[in-house]
Amino acid sequence: QVQLVESGGGLVQAGGSLRLSCAASGFTFSTYRAGWFRQAPGKEREFVISISWSGGTTDYADSVKGRFTISRDNAKNTVYLQMNSLKPEDTAVYYCAARFTGYRDPRYWGQGTQVTVSS
Image (cartoon, rainbow, N blue to C red; front, side):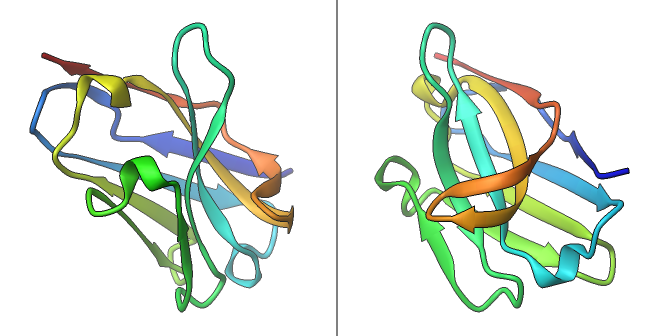
């Protein structure tokens, strides 16, 4: 059974940092691209960032370049999202995703974790 379980969400003040984790199981995580999407209230889910299976290449949404970084530990089947210089507009439910089958198009999804940035 495929599972992606996010953790690390919470409430943070603007300018602060948070680190999200996503633990994968039920598939060969180390062979697939993984990443994060987010959905703010009243908006569609949007791509945030992704990383190749080897960690060699990353893809970023313009809105998070220079503030967010992604990393992975294939030995632990885990992908991380480090979020710095957070802004109120980063408030959203953050979803872990894996097994990208197309451009920014993953097959597997986590349940999401709430990130709230207060001004």
